[in-house]
Image (cartoon, rainbow, N blue to C red; front, side, top):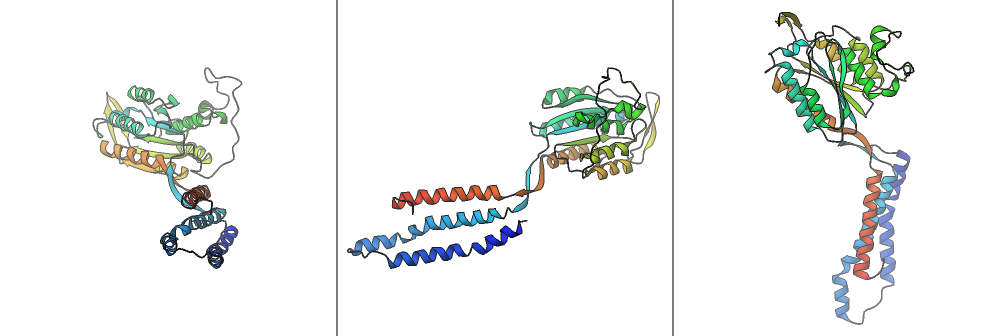
Length: 343
């Protein structure tokens, strides 16, 4: 627990004075006590002697809480997730049809993603980007889980693996005012993107922040291969790191890799683990390898629980002030109930 030390020291010095002040008031009151003419009345009063101490003790505890709150203590607390958007970036290259992850890599990824969506809090926006030879936004960030599920069920596979392009496209969705344009990064600033407004904003110059420090969004990237086209993966990861966005990476399938054929097309299935691990490290995220459908579901469950809660230093002063107010209210209520006055 952390404190503002000057206020904390003053509160520690003041706390012992409160009980001493109360004891002094008790002795002063005892000296001025009235003599009872009836022994029965005296006995009845002594039987309820403890009641007169309850309201003052509650007030002392309330004052102690307020003094402690003045030091503005903080403590690491696990709180509900503060982020508002998650971007899912999912590989739909032809190698996702391979059956080493049953029933296929793609089917396992689809089912795991839908399960992940069902477990997330309903107030978190989720967007969906798919990538193979190119990357595209198939569903902007939304609270509509049905639309996301429909988009996941409608995946179309292609040749190629543009991992970096998928990351850039996720960032463009998360930061629409930064002027991030994937076409310019691939083909150069002079490239004319079909349908692009000539007055579109130029790329915004940003001040890099600490990796993983942006609490309003995260990216979950799933890939079963290595980049073959598009933006360099680590260049894209650097863009995310500079914006403080964490990337949680899921590597799917075999690590060693082998040549295979699908519909007569040679597919090279090698997971580029070193690069994917570096993406996670650069951005303050995590890397997980999923070699089976069960492991993939487990990874998504782990990410879901990690993303829903987070531990951060939280100031306790408001909680202490609220507790003090409740104690003062209780002390006043008991005093009125027992003695008919505010003692």
